Length: 336
Image 1 (cartoon, rainbow, N blue to C red):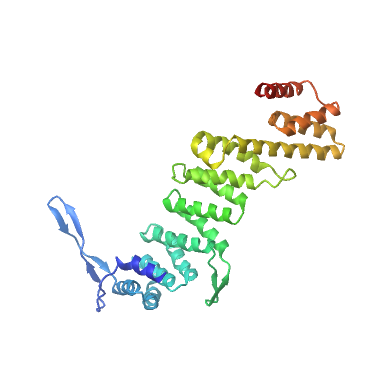
Image 2: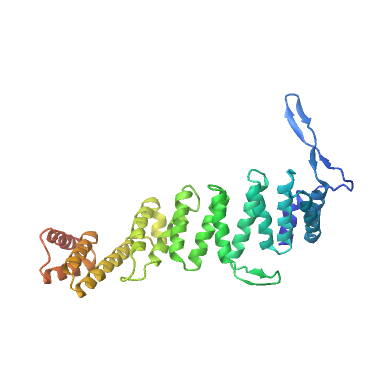
């Protein structure tokens, strides 16, 4: 981590003056007559020294400098305050104290929305969030990493999307969060997150990946005929859309007619089980309604054939339902 911080800060190194006066940085602007030197930008020597310390892999020294500087300027309108908070957060991060660094990044995000440091602070929080959802634990009293931090990681990934909507960083955060839920078998949350990704980033190069994961997460959320089938219903629609958009990839990934048929059969089994439950409770009207709904919604399923048999045996198969089954049988004979 320290090496990463050192590399990131290497381009920001400025020679720190020993005097109390502010250093000057040369800046040029392109005018009609060519490049013209403009008034120098003021650089606080303490912050320049802190940057130098970070680049030299001395986060402790940088932290001491920045703590003193922020104490002095915290309640002022000093233009370098957001930079100081960012540097101090980076120093804490380099010191392997990422949780404390979040306080400084949050200070920038909440107090200096329009500053150049704002997107950098959000990006730092994204990197910390990734580490948390991938298993990094928080330090307990600053000593041992024994406290789980996945919930905090989730929250940070959501904040990234809220704070920089539509950005590449928000796109990465959405995908990271979806993958985390999928990896930890929280398939309902995974399906929702991939769905959000597909809607928010329709032109993303990862859209196909997210759409495929959304299908499988919805299918995985179905636990059997006696449980909620909303995941199957959504998966059925998503399969059709994926096959239409990416026919070659659908075949390669197994999103084929066979998978669609399995989803259809499973949804039909759910309705059949519900109808049987009504029959066990002597509620023939509700059972009949459910069985007729099954036949109309899933006419080519094995459960539909059984539904017709149940209705016939109980004398509940009315005329509007019969043609559906007749048409189904005719289709089957033609296919044979």
